[in-house]
Length: 86
Image 1 (cartoon, rainbow, N blue to C red):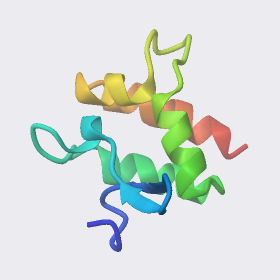
Image 2: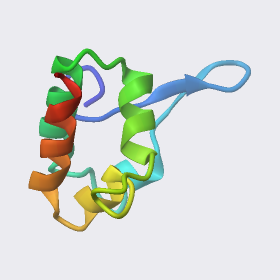
Image 3: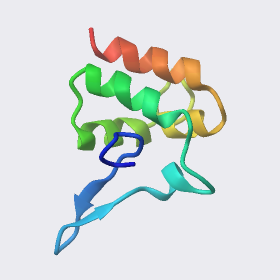
Image 4: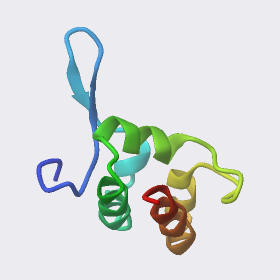
């Protein structure tokens, strides 16, 4: 799933270990994540930048984008992500 960009993780710690945030995979992988990641990567984000954006609170959404995605507010999150590319 990581290779196909359906999921996102970053290497952290010592030694560097690939970690995937729990919110992205529990209780199951988020169906809305791959499309949102595509928008972010098309805007030039790296994996680490995309992950940071997903977990940073956004005033327009009233929460972090990952929380909005988990509550099925997919369209507003993707609109916010699309603006980043311009």
